Amino acid sequence: MAPAASTAAAARGLGPRLMTGSTVPVTVMLAALFVIWMLAAIPMNADRVSMQFDRQDVSPTVTDFVTATWTLDRAVLPTPIQVGREIVDSTYGVMMSRFRGWDRAVDRLLNHQRSLLFHIRVTLESTLVGFVIGTGLGILLAIGIVHVRTLERSLMPWVIASQTVPILAIAPIIVVLLGNLGLTGTLPKAIISAYLSFFPVTIGMVKGLRAPDPLQLDLMHTYSASRGQTLAKLRWPSSIAFLFPSLKVGIALSLVGAIVAELPTGAQAGIGARLLAGSYYGDMPALWAAIVASALMAMLLIGLVSLAERLVAAARGGRI
Amino acid sequence: MTAAVVVDTPSSPQLSEPTGGPHPGHAPVVVEVSGLNLVFPTKDAPVHALKDVDLAIKRGEFVSLIGPSGCGKTTLLRVIADLEHPTGGTIVVNGGTPEQARLDRSYGYVFQAPALYPWRTVLRNVQLPLEIMGLPAGERKARASESLSIVGLDQFERKFPWQLSGGMQQRVSIARALSLRPELLLMDEPFGALDEITRDGLNLHLLKLWRETHLTVVFVTHSIPEAVFLSSKIVVMSPRPGRIVEVIDCDLPAERDLDTRETPAFLAISHRVREALRKGHSYD
Image (cartoon, each protein chain N blue to C red):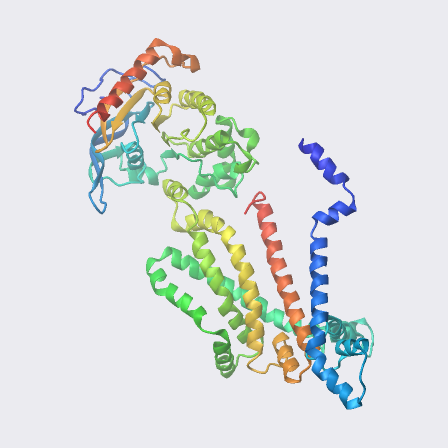
């Protein structure tokens, strides 16, 4: 039966495959989002549009009015088309303006203050540095907590308390303190990322390192394995199933941390700086473009963690 | 250490020399337990898991510990393996303390469940104890392959545990215990979770393995046919407090197959084991 079924599946045409794949649902969702967004833009921008028409003393037709709400220059809610145009302008547009060879163009794309990709790059740097620091710290804390009883009692309350402090309150303190110590740029932001991302890793890994059942631990005991050997050969491999979900949460929090760290200090670069500038100057398309960029970054980062998870699973016989 | 069969149970012990199995009659004692007590403190009342247990296991014997749940058979095995610590009495394993035997890795332990590591291939699972011993890679590989061919799984080295049946997984765990090249094999209901057909096959396999390797085996079970089929000596235990009721020599011929179970000798021993179990149970 099984071979016949798989042949049938292979023989199915494009239509059925589209129906069962993720293409159709994703497209439908995007289309629905687009329509809702476009419709929402009409009432949101209606006040400004009617003010404009009043000033010109014309009574617009419905079509004119709706078109006006969708093309308003300083819209309260810019349409997805306007946001898309802003994204293209701030990437491709910046790259191609005053074109003098591809080297220069790529350099502008990555390093020009007006390029969205430059800000993405700056935020990604501190996100990734913070994620590495946070993950390392999280794993070390978990290993300590699992192996030393007093650490569990003394450290765990602090680990939990650290996350009850609003990051918006603590971020400027850390950035200013580190700035006084002469640390500026990526590192203070990375530390805030690490501050957020170590937590899920610690919690997940404490659980994961304790995942081996008594039987497996007894087995190591009959081999007279040292604690280090038990950690390396049993606890660590057992915890991998808990590590990756923690890493996915952790990397998303790292991104949030990096962006939040850019907000209070009036940073000149990064997605946070872009958000700040957008709201400061009422440049809604730029604000939305930064939000879309951060969402895409989060998807990319989580995708990378998932890819790593799949590679590790493949090395472990297809199972985590 | 003299080679007497030490049985100090209050009920009349059987003192005839075992004749089943390949071992010589006057082999040295591998495990000697005397006056062993183990009390687990609990909130309401202490639990007497083992009370005044005396037992001697000679080299090359196949000793089954049989009894209902809570009779301390697994606990006794775990004491031999240094996984539990007695609260009284003495125990000698391989001429030393259980701890020394564990540190020398002189026994292999097979648990109720295979406890294989799902992220390791069969071959690497069997290599696990050898990695912990710190053997070089070449020797690890050779020893693991050898152990796997003993249990007839040399064709499955590169499979992962989930690709094997339950019976095969348990054979891998036996190979893993054998890779240590132990003199003593401790088995805690290794086939308890398997279906009867698989179990029969593995019993035959184990019997053959025991004859060929001259191992000393201590085997915990709650199946009377299994105990009679495999053993050269059956230790019948009883719960509350966990103690030995009777030690029965199982003097069936060394060559046994599944038909042996139909013979009058087999049925007679089974009957004696059942009687002993009933005796142990009568006053609870």
